[in-house]
Length: 179
Length: 155
Image (cartoon, rainbow over all chains, first blue to last red):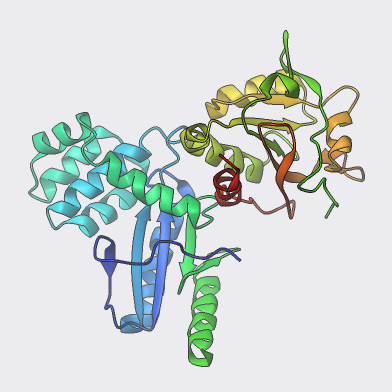
């Protein structure tokens, strides 16, 4: 069974407490429609588990099939170094239908980040190494498509509707109790 | 799942069409590692994901000097359309006529469905199978096994 090879660390984008009993890691692609679908599901799953759950998002852009995925990921990383990762992350998924450079720059402005700076960072691919590092770690962990989820380090195979993820996370909690 | 050829077995040679007017033989690639990825069909959603993933990991495969070849029983024109649509940067071989001749040699053919298994082979520079893995047909095996096998090859 595939397991997470890169442990959650301070360089990750994390929602929730390090003391949460369950960690859900998603490898996702901002242009992938399934990830767009998963976005709203994650919100509900987070609501369901509250402080018991910690959520981590890592980049896994399939750039050859999704031409905007890489710039979107780099834009979220740009927002991240300015302390606004999750706002950018949410903004991209909520406007996935109109994803492109204009949207990314507009989102940056809405977050009071510098659009010219973002444009410059995209042109120089400043955040490409960071995105690629996430991607490589994902490949080594057995990410086989997007989105791929890990619950306490174990890959979740199969559907990811709210009830599927809730049930899988409950099982993750039980495994932890046994261990 | 099929009992595919195992590590230590010499990789059966083959010559297959790679485009409508080009053919490729395994022996031409002797001297460097080769990744053979048998998959059931162009256009089926899981295959798309698997090959799209390999397309993204290609630079990591290349860093081991390895050549990636996809193989299915689809014909060359089908492969050409699929390659174009998915922007694939590695060859897809057509095991089309005689149907599945190569897949059968590697014991990676699902006769009942008439398609290849989702089977992976890493062949070393001497033409010997170093690693093989057959995934359940509905599950994308990812790329981690291939990368591990490439790392384990003697330098």
